[in-house]
Length: 324
Image (cartoon, rainbow, N blue to C red; front, side):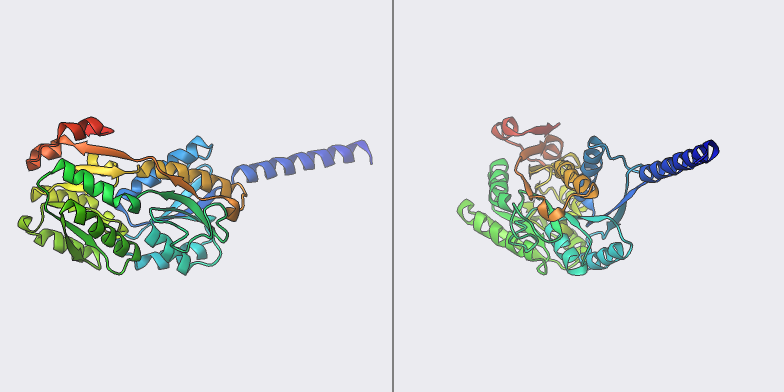
């Protein structure tokens, strides 16, 4: 091989190496996100920040293909099938009901979930330690906090006698949550006023028609469709002078009277670890499900004043965040 041939070969090899490096650098992963809207966007913010902390920048290393079904659980399956047809690298599913629907609709794409119910009981994974299959992710305390949440609401509002709950009877998670609420209410001598709604429209109509004499407060139980309408619930209840108790911190800043539970933002940050590892080549079936158990209590004194409720000093001192 003469000198000119060697030089030509090296030049070609160098150009090919540069092209390969640029191609590798240009790799942008596509992450499908399916959610029912509303408060779940706090988890999406956490996901983005968590990925950034792990060296994955949005637009440079990944893009999010958002599918907000706006409280329509029936639209989840079509959204999931569409994302799988488009060959996204993985799907991030928020809420147990959404994840269950994604499971029915897909066959191959890896799924990272964030669920408030036991994923083993829901049939999403085999065990927490060894998920198996295509699903893994984050389990956060929510359904397990129903009794404590009601207890705190009673402490905030000692005259509490009746609370109204709205839920979709077609949602297994919501049915279980309603049962938990009934069981928790009995020893507190609180009556649960149940309103079953099958759609966002029915929920909104039911809220607007609610007579303040029918209940002393609004109490959230696990239902992603209902949570997607949290701001509407907060505004409507506030206009009716009804206290509201939710399970997500960010909603207190948006006007809810109180919230006791996990931070959805932190749920998203923790989920980022799974997304990053799977995109980097890790086998999803080998990534144990992690539980987020850090809970907090937030109260809003501005809302309390507006609706004429005096939050006891003992509750304010115990709260992790007081908005005033």
